[in-house]
Image (cartoon, rainbow, N blue to C red; front, side, top):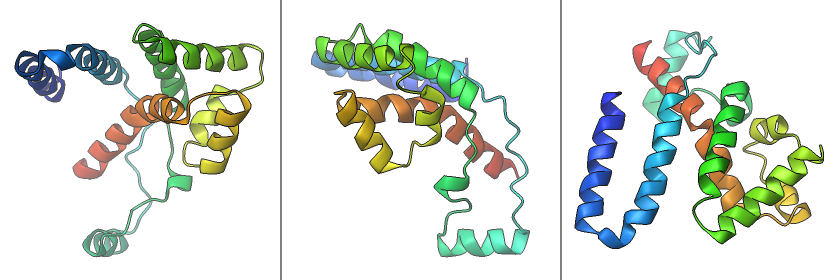
Length: 163
């Protein structure tokens, strides 16, 4: 098991013991972490294409090394993770179940393209329109999207550290 995952699971175990009232939400979070850590992006992120001097200056000045629009996501892995998170989320409570069912129905009838939704994760207007059109809670939509793309972001950050 990944050391980071092991540490997080130990922390979750400790929090459950300390605050039993949060056991349900911590169990949910633990399931999400397990799914995220089992998802390994299939894209090679190691070549950033940034000149070392420019990169050093950007890091020193606190500027991002890549813009959201140019960030490459592993869409196939993110789609699989999104689907897994939906299966987990449907068991949490009625509100999650209803919102996930609305999402799945929109995807099933081809009214919504999950790949496009994940690609446009930073497009607030687009996501607001989806939430409104399909009567999906925006916070739940954001949560599912961000948790689905997080392994790509985590993997990308790991590659930056190694460079």
